[in-house]
Image (cartoon, rainbow, N blue to C red):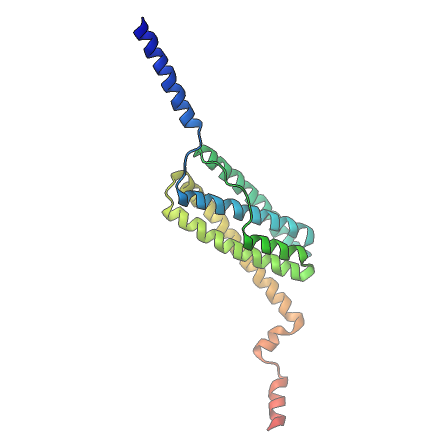
Length: 199
């Protein structure tokens, strides 16, 4: 009888230990933790900068793009939290890095067309970095759940990069026409006349 009680007690203890192990956060590899931290930071930056654009942008196209960024990155953030949970990895704090803080500070000070230019540049740089980061992890990541997330998120980020590149190029083109910067780049007709006079 004692043997049976001892065996039952041992099973209960072993079962509790196994359960505790399941619930305790796993120690993820350093590259996975670095990836998770960068994803959290990038997502926080995309949302925060786009919320500013919703308030300050004048162009309806820029406002519409900003709304799409808020919607898509909020969804990506929720999916990522779910991946962290299922992999038993503690969520990293969503803290902006020095470069992201500087970009937000610049956006907070900018107004009108200067704001839109700064916002589109920030989005372009941010999405270039995000695509490079996620693309690399999708190919070489060591944690299967994170790798799967990267593979699913990549097309969305690539689409964002394509959209912001197009939007920025059109904004630059539109901005050049009234100022005459485009004609100066080609060479204004006044220059040859001036040269002719010198000769």
